[in-house]
Image (cartoon, rainbow, N blue to C red; front, side, top):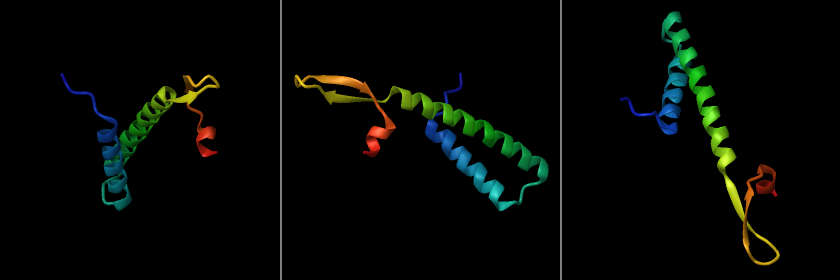
Length: 79
């Protein structure tokens, strides 16, 4: 059974694909295959990031001094 690829290994592969395509040395057919693989990796990585973002929560203290779990809001982090 093949091990699931980690986010980091998929990102490393995507970076490798970008470097290969930027060189412009691969034949057109190979470049197209690399582009397709990169597009699939990019979509998969985007989904992983979306899922991770949905899991992030922040612990806030309410008026009684109790910690209350709240969803993380990106706008709150910028303030």
